[in-house]
Image (cartoon, rainbow over all chains, first blue to last red; front, side, top):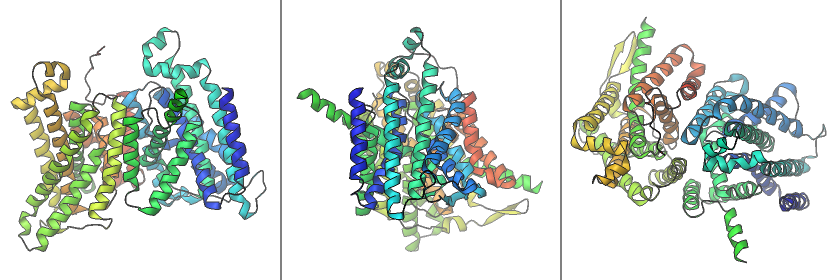
Length: 310
Length: 298
């Protein structure tokens, strides 16, 4: 646990310093990687319990729209308030829906979460006040009421993203070492035994589900303020597929893995899209296939195997 | 009353279209327990193959009346090439894995096929309106409806009833039902389960390609066709119950009618209601409306 804490702290410190020299586009990629990494971190929690959500875009989009609504209706552009709004909105909805979803396993968990995210998509697409299919623009980011000079905005957002995401990752790693956190693999292996132990699998799943949603909400708010624009496609099922891809790529080995996975994904995405826009999905699909077949524990397991050999 | 009548006509046509598109999905799940995301790719493949073949057919001045046969042939051709390749080449090594993992594998294949389609056909839209315009239109309740839509209804009826007949009245179908019921015992009794999986996957994909091929004349064939249809098919199949044939029919009718009603009376909720019904059914009857009690296997 201590090692994880140091690792996260080291990453944060490194990024805060290195960020000063990074070009703008690289800062953008890293910040988006944090936003998507947060969503993937939540999915990783669920994946540890054997649950694959095909609708995590629901909370990502909800977080983004909550952040956007702050600016559109209240004129607030503060990054931290936006993230808070995203977290609250996602957490509240997840708490309510969690009562239902906590009963579902396997394919049905995936399909119900898919249906729920498509409901949000259907609502947003036809909502004139929220810009229907075009979405709307987000106010320029401010920090504690101060608007950074334009060449510093990216760095400020990156720094906030790094600090918030890695703190959340640290909290998650603490959570994983609690009895409730340790239940997840047990639920995957044999749920009946979990119940016989006197633990409630349903409650454990509910808690995980809410945590995952809160992180997706924060991620959505971050993405919104970084990109500066939001639209209903953030709730479409292909967005959820993207998050699943990142999660499978990263594996469940470590709380830092989803961020690494998201960064790799963003780099592949950007470079492959530039090189040949018509085959980047093909490379993603191939990568996903190869990882499922040859590295079922994700890329992180490469490090582990290496560590054992030496 | 006129409006109600056209709600009904639209609903029937939309239901028929959904049924054809979703039927293969439920068949494949019923037999192989695979939630098959590549189903959307086969729909798109069918549409593209139909668009280019029919386009070539008409460009050479062959009789346009026969273009319906070309649509059929295009779907057959593209499925017979691609489906066995996927099943024999990749999927058959994955059957031991968890249902959710196989879902992810078909998702990966879906991503790959999306780009393969773009590589083969490019990103520009294809139009083949001739088979659609050829038949003229009929009038119900003051609104014109293209006669072509009746072909969609016929296609749904033929494929639905045909599949039901195959399953319940032929030797092959009865053996297939045995495979559905218990794969291991069927294998022990000497049924070549692998061959049934191959045939099922190909046949199920063919249904998707057929739906795509016969939809092609009514839309512009563009990248992203499969992305739209796959969630809709999921909704249809889930509402009726995964793996149930009458379930898929019921699901298609429910979704079709609900959509038709909302398009006519409350267009702002069109997409929302479909998935709302899906979530509602999952919430109260997770295994769908047509589900039977499932025996627990230890």
